[in-house]
Length: 368
Image 1 (spheres, one colour):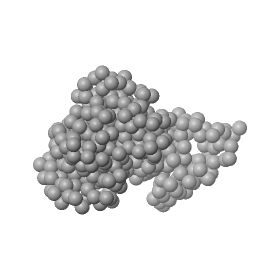
Image 2 (cartoon, helix red, strand yellow):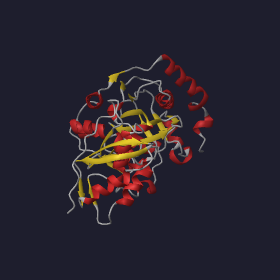
Image 3 (cartoon, rainbow, N blue to C red):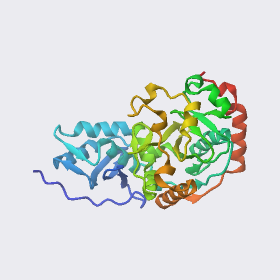
């Protein structure tokens, strides 16, 4: 077995030296650390380390060699591909991957960021019309992307019974018009994809994360869902629920689905990650309002839409406010988040956006 060279002495990137240091903790996996210099625009003196497992030992040297000489402006895909191509056929990476190495490198170059690289804010629930809540998702994502607002976690609240449909859903295919009329449902289209959300006051827990896309740089679209909700899994565990992700975007327990996520990336670098969880949903009313066909249920292991969703109230026995408080506490503890409020300008912009977009028939029926 080839002996590895002794570790080199690298100085931190913030001490005025040429040294760059990046770390990435793989969700459910191991810590990946990379140190290197940048010489004439290329990576030099690369040293990968961490608490991962790698066989054979010599593969570590091959990864270091693959990274050495790469242009410092390489994208995450280029970096990961270079690492994968350099690995011997028999190499086994346990607890990390070529993609994880790429994220650590991008972080070291300040092209990608971690949670603690940002000052996070939390906005507590406040009752707003559903149209305004949806418009705020677009407005606040724009504000974070433009650097005018810190990355923010916002909890929704509302009074009117509503259905919020995904950006690409068909109104006629997703809704029973008779049920919508009978139950006085407000129907709104959001900017993110995904499925319809049936929302009555107090029956859901809904939150939105507004973040810079640098936080998910190098993370696949699919993996970004679980990555951005790791904190909420910890919060659910705190209230006695063992939850997990069902790809692509469902959050579930062994008793059924409890929620779903949706995302939207904006051209200015802002990103929306939005989650709704069922707290005390009226499943009978839900199926009178939403069309949930056999094809939708075909890969969910159930034949009944009413049995597909299992509310948090039944699983925890806790008040909705207690679960929201646990979520806010965990997010604050993990990311040193501080309280914030919606500004008058943000609310005014959201209301104007309702008038010009989210409250219009053109937007609602853009997919008939």
